[in-house]
Length: 504
Image 1 (tube, one colour):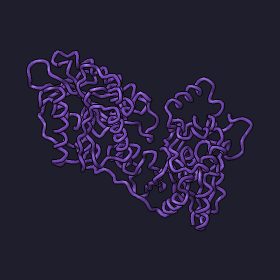
Image 2 (cartoon, rainbow, N blue to C red):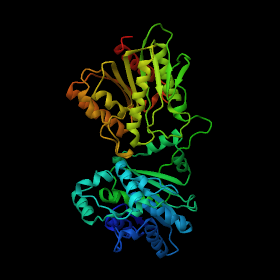
Image 3 (spheres, rainbow, N blue to C red):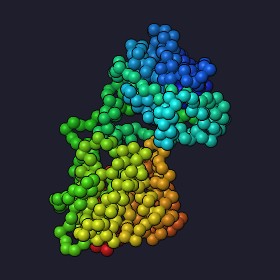
Image 4 (cartoon, one colour):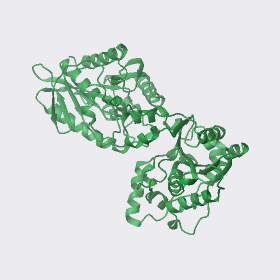
């Protein structure tokens, strides 16, 4: 049998594990729920004496109390993964597996602050640390504020009441002290348990691996498994029996394995565009590229806006990805100026910066004498869809059409809070007669598909001029992965719709 050491997240004490622990012990497993100092364990006179090292010591004490004959599975929920990894690094020989329970992916030298879902709060706490040395505590959430820290879907009212009643303030130093890892535990078996209601999924992680995200490549090894639970951020309260079963299976090495990218093949986003397009050269100015048609006189322009967030270190940058260059050359081949740009959407907090970059590109493009500045279309892709909101809310007269392919049209909880300005589902009621063309894929990730449906419902209520192009058998970012006639037809139909609104 296994010894499970369960480490809670922010604000929470050992009571959250009560039902899951009972189910594990009923099967003969040894269970230890760790009482972290200051939240679930002893509370010193001042929180300023409690830091991440304090919580690592709490976990180490429990590890050292477990008899040597049983394999230890360390389970870290939310913030709890930070002291779990710190302890595993120092007792790697005692640990049989680490379970990331709906948590982030802490890195050496990075504080837990970086994993907080609220960007505004991250900035506020970082500023406080710089001025008063991180004294004090972060107040525990009230009953209606837990959603700020993760989805409460599935949590019964009584359990939410208990969670709130037992919650304790989080000492700030636990969030601001960097995690220090030597790498001693880097080869230990790992299981990730993802909670779908927050937007995370195995498919999403696999796409990140395929995309080449460097922090995810380590999770493609044979000793790494994944599970999903159809619930919110607190599965020990919403699905305690199911969580216990998943933990037992994880301890046995079961679970889904990610597929490592084929080194002989480019990642999905760098594969060829699904259409043969003219080899039209680009003109590059700053962060903007123009693909000019072989046509006389000022021509309309279509500006293609990539999705994200995309790492600032990604190479090639998005405007050189085959889907973007393919769309731009397709547009130029049909008589309009195709425009691509790199914008600064590297984090969910960067939507305002990306919006500034789009505005700068539009100013540059409209001032070009080869462009008809009164006939412009914007075409957004994927996570760039949130950037539609500004243009729906106050469409200028020269904007003849807005298009979006497999777009995100409301913020996704899994990515963290986004500035309320960037909500197309709200902005569409101000769009008036502005034509909107949406390309919807049938094999979309559920959390993204839900935002599209919400947008379409809102557009019907307000009477917005929305046209939907359905691609039933296509996936997100289908232009380089679904090389079918259905997909090719959809791209042509989308382009034709946009060009019609530009009267080309």
